[in-house]
Image 1 (cartoon, rainbow, N blue to C red):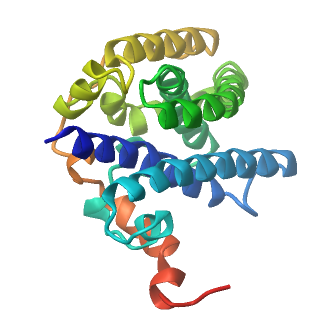
Image 2: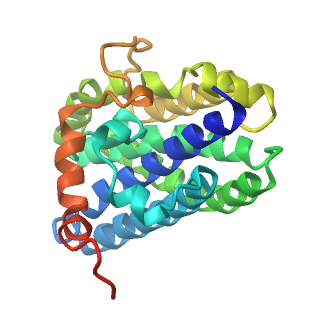
Length: 253
């Protein structure tokens, strides 16, 4: 791959992951356990959708094939999506939802902090603004992990049940492929070893305070979102998210 192709792939990974996680959070609209939580979830989701737009707009400009950010969001099939496997998993109960959010946030923040120092000025600008939002996201999700893990017997049980449901998908958070390594060498993306170390430290600290066990490091398995090999859940999510633009492709409002 050339540098431009590597960069487009990376922008799609960032944009798709933020978009899909935002979509998952918005599925709690009208169903959250409390009004304050519903507002908080929607705010985080909207932050992520806004970030996704910036990444996808940049990707669309580099692709230069007539598509814009909306086309990339609503007119690609699941095999063309590059989001993390973690974010496409179903919300489950509130323990699963908050654990997914926390594991994503704990990775997302050091990634954005590293990208804010990128040699690509546009990436650095987007990341610097997004990092301010994600600092709040991580603080909030981390507090929920502690509250549920070290709360009642029922909340602790639910957190213990949530961990094996999503932990294996964190393998993508702590490893880089050749494309990301080339971008790192060019000073565009952060060092994955540093990101992985920061992620692990954050997870260890929060899990300890939450009286939760930290599982062994996950191993790669047959799915690989970087190659478009997703779980069965992404296609269902996209069918819902993309229905209106695909049903009325020329509609304007």
